[in-house]
Structure formats: structure tokens, C-alpha cells
Length: 558
Image (cartoon, rainbow, N blue to C red; front, side, top):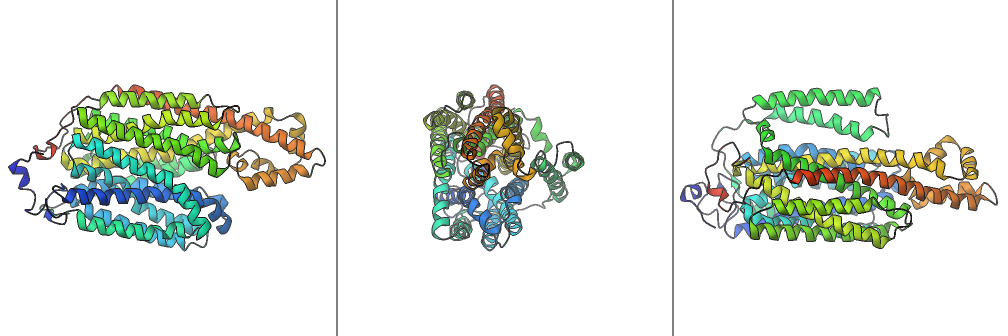
């Protein structure tokens, strides 16, 4: 790697030897970069692992804490808190360095984990998971930026693939580890297990990342930060509650959206006038930024639609167990890893990314198209085939987007552009989950009545309203305990109860398959749009001397 003398002057004499040296940029050189890379990968691995481990333990947690009514908020609170803090961490880390915010995020995450393990009610757990999410925002926003601190754009292809591999491995190991910890030690240990790993990551970050000296007065955009939070929280609440807790047109939902519009309008107005905005508004006039952000949003909708709802199909339609469902989903994560590594290798060798993005989006879209054909007659082998195709495309697109946008902007904006892109993707996932869940529930309910034989409809009509509503929730119907409870209700109908129950389950599987097909059609539409958007990606050759070029406020290429 070539270094210009002027640029080297910004680093302390020991910057290449010791990551802890004081310097004026986040740049990491010499042997220190390999230690820093290890610390970043460790942080990414355990933060990704946390989500999947907790997901596996949730049925046991709900049974112990008795809070099924707010079950979804254990995840929603975490995702909301992490999503709204991502751009704030990204902007501040560009100015003050990554290290203090890594350390702060890890410390907050550890406190949240310890308190989550001490929860005595579901409300406690929701609040402590929100605290965890505030810490997790740092671990979501900065690893990709730190990869940019270590490697130039052309080198990043290979290493962004490795970071995606870390995420994929955590997704594979997490469900099995979560089940083992819950069975062997109890559910509280799925949170306590974070503490030693987070402590190790904290020490590694403290030792390997440089301290950044700020030689000028910095104006922190607190007003913009508060307005961003004020705008995002009601929007996320509206999308979470709409269609489930409240109708879409209810005063509560409309009021939340109104607050969102006002707060975000004020945010844009403030950011346009801020001396150092948390999200520079001129980013959105840059074609590379808007294109990669749009792609990140579209891909996230397709990914969340698959990862969150396909297990319902596997368990509810194919009749497989939760453990078997996890095994069926594993090949997708393997293909995500493979796609990331392949795309990274190609980018490093060729210094280009556009053609890889087009091919990757085509594969992802093909996989989504195959998923729309799944019905009651499908097998788990067919599901695995479809997931392999989609996973390779999705996995290849992830590192391409990060590298393309980092390559287009000056190094001084590394943290904020990466974090903003990550923020858009996270926001898409939070919004997509309730919308797709509503689509599935409505499509399922619309099909279930006509699919049930007359005798079954008559029997169901005699049940209390609360028990009838239970039958309209597909997520309840794949739960073994709920199915046992429903079977006992049908048994009360006498000798024909068992036959009626089997006819009802057959109708459920038919209706659920139809609802899932509707959901996958929507995901396919997003995939097709993403494929078309890849053609709008500017084809900019990946740079090798990015860190040592003069830096202005604007990106090098549109």
C-alpha cells in the first residue's frame, strides 16, 4: 500500500505499531490492523449471536414470565433502540473516533444483558432489551466503518465478505446454542453468557483501536439527534401496532404518523442549517448514496419476509418441528456466507462491483420467485433448494452495497455514510415485519373460512369469541401447546371431534400456504424492484489510495 507523506503526518509515529496511539483520524495501519480486525469480528459475532440465541429461548421465557401479550416487544424494543441510535453513533465516531463509542456501546449492552437475566416480568425484559438495543446500535453501525479504517476500498471486498460470514455463522450456531443453554442452565443464562464475551470484546477494542485527538471545536448536533428520535419512535410504534393492536385508520395510528411527519420535517429543516448535521442532507443528492440506500431497504424487506415468516410455513404447512425448521433454514445462511465470500473475492480481483450486483440481485429475485410456488405439496428439500438460490444472491449483495458507498465518499465521512445505510436497512426490517405479518394474517383469515367444511365451521361457531380469534392467528396454530388446546376443544364435540380437528388442520395448512404465497409475492415485487435498481448503480472503479487523497465535503463521484 502506498502512503503519501502529507497523509502520514496526520498519524502519530507509533500509529502503525500500536492501535492505542493518539492520532487525528480513525485510520489503522501496520500490524495493529490485524488485531483490530479480530476485535471487530469478535464484536460482530457475539452481537449477532445474541439475537438468535434469545429467539430460541423465547417460548420458555414466555412460559416463565407469563407475558405473551407483549411477546413481540422483546424484539421490537431492541430493534427500535438500536435503529434510532445507529446514525448518531456513526456521525459521532467520525469526529471523536470509534473507540469511545464501541466501549460505551459494549458497556451499555453488558448492563442490559445482566438486567435482562434478572427480569421478573415481561415488562422488565422489554425495558432491559431496549437498553441492550441502545448499546447494540454501536455494534451495528461501526464494524463496517472500522473495516473501512483498516483496508482500502479494493481490499474491503474480501474482508466485508468475512464479516458477512461472521454474521452467517452466528445465525447458524445461535439457535442450537440457545436451545442447549436454555435446557442445560435455564433461560436467564442466554443473557448472562453475553457478559464474558462482551468483556473480552471490550478489552480487545480498548487495546487495538486508536484514540483520536480532536484539534478543533466540534458542534454536536443534539437538536437533530433528538428530532430524529422523536420522528422515528412514533413511526416504529405505528407500524408495530397497526393491524394488530389498532386498525390502520384508527386515531392512535394516524396520530403517531402525524407526529412522525412533523418531527421528521423539523429534522430535515434543522439538518439543512446545522453546522455539523448528524445526517448531512446533501448525501441524498448523491446518486450512489440514494441507490445503495434504496437497495438496502428493498433487500431488507425480502430478507425479513423470508427469515421471519418461512419457519411458520415449515412448521404450519409441512408439519415439521421447531428444531427441524431451524435445520431447514441453515442452508440459507450457508449460502449467504458463500455469496458474500464470492462477491468479495471478485471485487478484490477486478476492482469493480456493478456486474456482481446485477447477477446477485437476479439470483435473489429468482429465489423469491421459487418461494412463491410453495404449496401444501412441497417438501423440505424444495424449500432448501429455493433458499440456497436466494441466499447466494442476498449474501453477495450485502458487502457490495457497503463497499460501493464507502468508495464514493471521502474517508472523513466513513462512519456516517456506513451508519446511515445500515440505519435504512434496519428501519426497513422493523417496518416490514408488522406489515408482512398483517398481510399473512389477513390472507390466512380470508382463506380459512371457505377452506373449512360446513361441519367444521358449525363446530367452530359454537366456541367463545376469544377461542375463535385464537384460530385466526397462524402463529398460534403452529405452537404445539396451542394445537393441543385446540384438539381438546374439538374433542368436546364428541365422537366426531377427532375427525373435525383433522379437517380443521387440513384447512389451516391450505390457508396458511395460500397466505404465505401472498406474502412471498410481495417480497418478490421488492426483489424485482431491487434488481432493476442495481442497473442504476454508478460504475466507479474501487480505489486503492483512498486514505491519502485530499478530502473535501463532497463525494468523488456521483
